[in-house]
Length: 233
Figure (cartoon, rainbow, N blue to C red):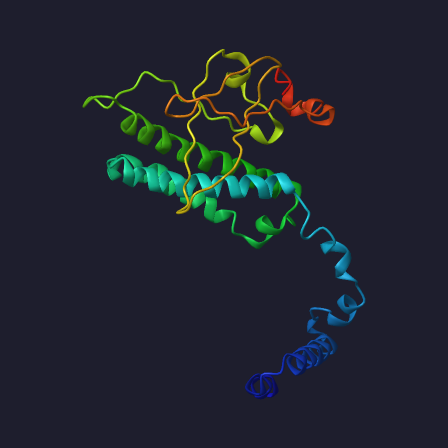
């Protein structure tokens, strides 16, 4: 009854006091209790020091996956794909992305085993979105009614460590850039390459003048995840 009366007053501090009093009385009755008095002596702030900086790679991939999911849904509509063929893929991408809304995922406070599971789920959702984008690309870029293209589309999923096999090894590469938001974006397109002389053309075949060749820092080149990468710029 006291707890109910306290809830009516809606004072959190009073509710906490009542809960502690109840737990103390319950413990003294021989039934045991939650142990508020013991917990109060622990400084939990130490566990949350990295709240905003924990697991930056996980948070980065979470945002990349969400961007790709939104783009895949847009392209599904633009390309007029058959929902019966894309629903399973988009549902998988949505479901895996939804898991990442858990408070331990978006804050980076989960234990390592849980973070590994999040990463595995993100990889599954990413691949599902990519398959939808590939289908849309095949439809939109087709020059005839067969809606089939011979251009092999490759997704560079490790650009965050300046790694992309096809741009590092092929002499000629066509880069497809899609802006999923409803306003123009003025950003540099960055692709890993080896040292050399390059000419860049836009979609109309005109020379792109604002081009720069920047060396990859030594710290990035030494990343173990870049093993096998030949990109230097």
